[in-house]
Length: 378
Image 1 (tube, rainbow, N blue to C red):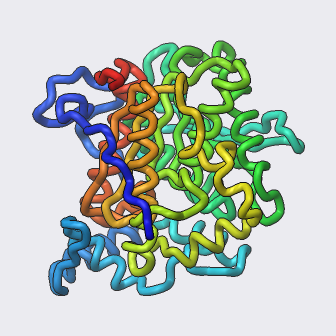
Image 2 (cartoon, helix red, strand yellow):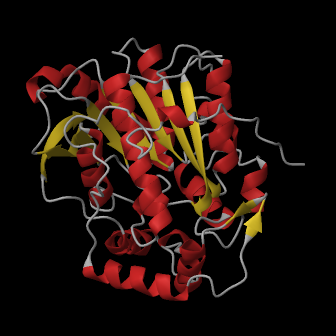
């Protein structure tokens, strides 16, 4: 019998950054209400096509939630061509790079550069993003991409990181951590921890605020951000100001209800999750290890958190359960479920609901870094 996730702490409407009905101050000079997403011409065509065909099928409702019609149309068009369904590692990686064409391109005001950091197993590549309009001594975000610890890289998340840099008013450092099967668990955790430690130690050199560094990631990257937050606490590193987790994987046992409720048909499938898990962490004896599954960790004293989930996502319940456990541990946390969306919305710019969601995520992260979380631990 599947477990039911506890109710996460609410997302107060008054704390949503940069809303039209909100008098919150802007985030830096760049966190405005205007859209910061540009589209590749192919993505523009896809968006127009979705708008034309959406609503022609019977609506999909699960757990009292209604799937966004444009997302439903996108799933119908993609029909099993997702990179998450490819079991050949190299092909899956190439597929995810190609799929990035459907994501945002980011504003032209954001420039980027790369460098190698000293990593646990050799040079560790990172890419920085900085908006030209950024204020002096801005916050920074250490970003870990998703992809099941097996696929994904700096390029698959280049567009989202550019939008994030523009909307959050922060310098973004995206980390090209090692992937499985070449480097299985815990290689990715070690690389991400080393990257955060370096960023924290070199904040002055980079011209960013050392006391306002966030950890952030989507899916597998959300898992890594949560684990780095725990390691920073346990190893006496400078505490991150925030952990921002987008549909994070927090439980390798895959034992909560949403895993089965959305096992197939919503981009990320149970089968693909089992393949990612087996490729990255095959030892079932480690699946409840807090060093891999943060849901089972002692969470007292970790960084304040923003947790974002999607209503039609196999990972929904473990993300919400993690938010609830953080709150129970006395950690300031806000949780937001985008009820009408699926896993991967942070990388999708061809549906209006996805664009609104990832812009809300980025605005909330920027607001929290500049002004703190307006929530008290329970």
